[in-house]
Length: 510
Image (cartoon, rainbow, N blue to C red; front, side):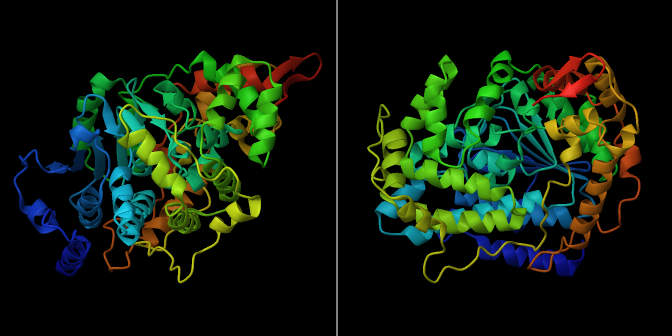
């Protein structure tokens, strides 16, 4: 890292400091011994080629606040620019939580005190960090070993490596508090299989452990007891290479075992959540006779009507947005929705009131036009100043996760070029093919192209450059076949989406 780059990082750190006395200087953090006071809300440690953030706000289950963001962002820039850093790790030592969300209680306090601009500052800097993590060319590993919700999703889901455990609890519960699933939910939720993203966005339902990996929100499943050893192994790596990091994580991985409930409910989710209005979705659920549909309908009926409407608009629009545009869309929406009474009411009823109560929503009588108006930029609205210009339409690292249903469909129907003219006659043959050929070479090639673009465009607006600038030429040789759990994952998709027909062989029916 050059002296000029370091000075730029330190100057940026000073500009990001909170106005209160409780600030965290990147200069101090970089020079401090590894044994840091436990009062710091984000601990930082160097271990060989590894650089480790440990979230350390246990009383609030590591809920993300602006001080934590202002600690992480400049230090992340410094580590990205350092030749000595091969891998960046984000973790928590809390026995139950990775990060339970953003500190929305503080945001509501600001709004009640007549200081909405201060609440907006938190959202701006949070989105900047989310986008920065999602566009770093350095291997970034999020160890989501525990509750991972809202803001905790934002600092992990865009990373190339997302390690789930049996303790992982994922959720985006914002519609229950009068908000919407932000922190990049506009980008990642529409890219989940079928209507799963729509369902998770509207209901705030939770996914546990293996289902997080099956849904491709996580990339690997590792038992919690192995996380310390995995952390040590990652720090031992002598190169900064996605393929090498992937192989190291695979050493500790196990095949995820998806829940029978999620598998059984997916057809209902896809059938009922395919509509473009909340009223149609509710009608479809009401017409369905299953207990799952009844429970889901009751869940939606308890949510903010405004949040449901805007969230559905968000997920549908997000399908066509690149990641930078997704954050700009969220920046517009959050500035509008935070000022609506439903947000203060939702947070007050759910988080301030003991025990929590059902919010008394104020948006039930709003017209569609009135709600859609909140999708438009407010007067004198300025875009969120992202810390670099990098963007993409699909995650460049998606080949590190399990195959998407679309990947399996293309193989079954012979649309994947690497299959050739071979016609599959059984599900077992497809399972074996994926065990031998995943990740698909076409996806890896696309990933290499995007990652090389990320390396070229990694320089920040402050002029800080990544230490990784050389083009990748051998990644597809290092990300080998044989991903742990891929056979079982493909089997579950085939059981739900295919049937074997006489004289035809295996036919895709979903």
